[in-house]
Length: 185
Image (tube, rainbow, N blue to C red; front, side, top):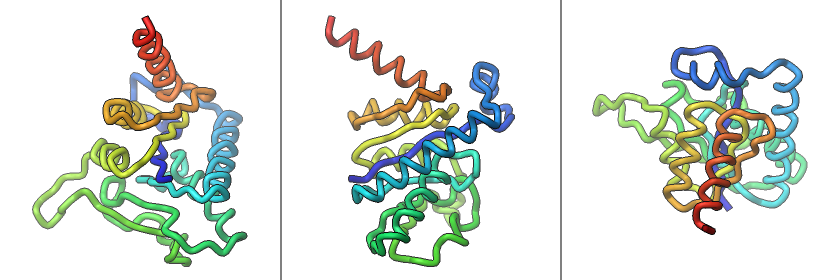
C-alpha cells in the first residue's frame, strides 16, 4: 500500500499564523512527535508499505517517518521503492541527498516544470501525493496538512489523522467525525 504522510509542527511564519496561534509545541511534545513518526515509519516498512513524502525538514513528519523506515529497511535488506519523494516544492535541490546511498529504496517525482517557468506551489505536492496514494496519514500539522487531508477526503481516500498532538490532524479528526455523524443522521 502507498501511504502519503503529511504533518509536523510549527515554525513561525506568516502563512501558518492561524495555526501557530492555536497550537504550539514545546520540546517535550516535539520529541513525542518524532518518536511516533519514527515508530510509524518502522512499522510501515516492516509491513511492506511504501510512503509518499515531500519534505526533509526536521520539523516535518515526513523526515522522521522516512528515517524510521530507513532504520527498519537497513535491518531487512529490502530493495523496493519504499520511499517516494515529490521534489521541487520545498527546495530546488534534490531532497534526501545524504540518505540516498541505497538507491533501491527511492523513487523521485516532480510536479513542477521549471523549464516552462513553473512556480512551486506547496499544495501541489499534497494534491500529487493524494493522487498517488492509497491512503493518507496525518500527524499534527498546519495549513498544508489540512489541505492534504481535505484533498484526500474529497478524493475518497482513507484518511488517518493522528490527532493526539493537535494541529491540523486534530481538526481533520473532528471534521471526519462531524461528516460521519452527518451521514448517519
